[in-house]
Image 1 (cartoon, rainbow, N blue to C red):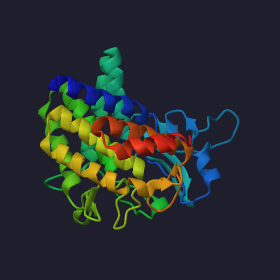
Image 2: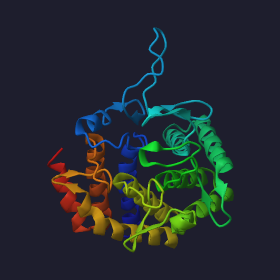
Image 3: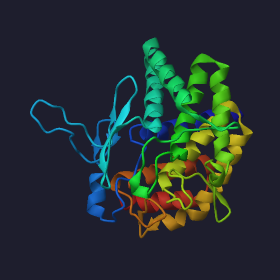
Image 4: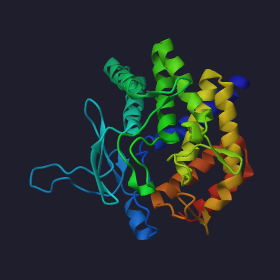
Length: 311
């Protein structure tokens, strides 16, 4: 019975995260509260979600969608200009982790070892660019994110959780201890306070893992929930009591603050009053359905159904 329950939990998480893998994980495109602008961000373009924008409109030159993941030896994300700051192409760690996970999934479905080699190459690259803080590993961005006033060197829990998942898969398919050990150091960052260089922010005493870390985070909803789901998956796979503890404390925070993300039947993207785009609103609906199935918390069912009606 216990094994069947554990398998069902993993299936719930995996079903949801297959959907998550199709989106770009640097999310909010603008501080504007103009809903019509946000609707543009919900349009799916290739492997990501973003505003259609080309870097060159000359005949015969392929346009690159803004915020799209561009494949290469090291995948890049094309940001173009964001809030007046030109970022161009960047090796965002969350994008590299996403490409690694997708390669693992391709290996799982095809058995093609080239996919496994590709995934491991990217995971090893991520380890090479990690910042070793002694007790834990962290991944920092080499470019600013002006949307939330973040300077070069910023960090975030969604990126960290995405790397954690990639390390878990690396261990799953190789059995190499270096990936398990690295995953444990990656997990530890979630218990280190933001003020000390980690990813844990106490929000009125509740555990919150900010997608965009700063002294006063914007508390983005979808990134927090995805982080919780990946923590839960990691806890189940490794039977990790620490990951389970972090997940449970995060669930408590979600129960406490979820009503504050209700915008009269629609959802807010963050705690700053920015309404979610149609894309992220639908994601919130999916996420809360998954959280209800995992926890049985009625508040998740309530807002899942309430927000579903407004789609």
